[in-house]
Image (cartoon, rainbow, N blue to C red; front, side, top):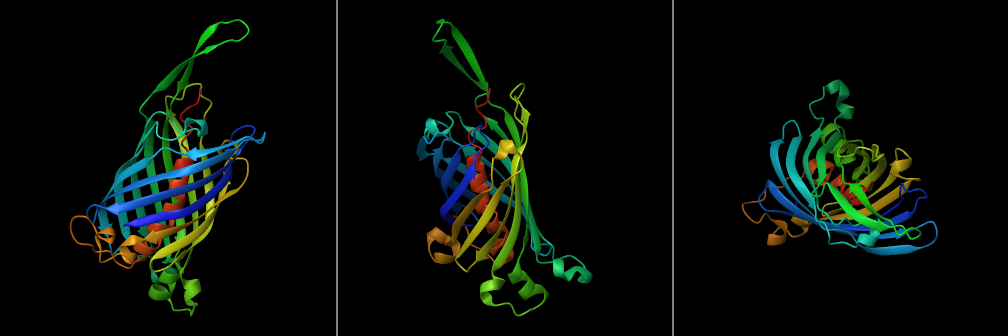
Length: 310
């Protein structure tokens, strides 16, 4: 889809000891090259406040992605895509943990509706699930630096490993609009029927080049709700860390996602660069697919600093 995710705002206390507060303003632009092939560009402004009261803020590295939708099965409401994202190093400010090296993540995505459930479970058909799994690796296996002991003058060599990570997550969401239009008209007001309650999970597990780094699985569980309009959606989620390394308290994210393919449907900004647009008004163009974008981008940006560990 052609989309613009802005403005967005996220806040969380990170997993450092002692923890600091991070306030982030992520943004992303997505554009279809063809109906099935798309690209995206995203970055964020991050402001970090240390427990001592010191604070710093600047832009993070630029992230680009290419994504190809290789399977679309409308009768079973199944969509699958594959692609690769690249977080380009040495663009953002290193003082707020923007890495000097590039991080590459090949990823597989899926989204599935439950319209094929039996009539006895018709109430569950508005549920949708989506998820992704990716393998994240840095272009530098390690960074070497020298340090000098101020008391003895001895010079030592510091080695920082940059591990590989398995990044994975899933969402479970319930479309009230789908309930009204496809299952049973229960007379919900239009303002209410556009709501999509959602629970999202996102995890990262070190799987390579992590010997003696002390890294462990980190992740968050994010309950929230999205209001889906004809040309935009607005949503909010809590960010609940699964352990101390993931964060020291519950955070939150709010954001707006504009559907450029609806706002500018008659202009090149809202159509594929090559070929015709066949966007349909289904919950995977106005529901499950959209509802997971906001936090996926924010979660990716919060993982920027984890490669640089000893």
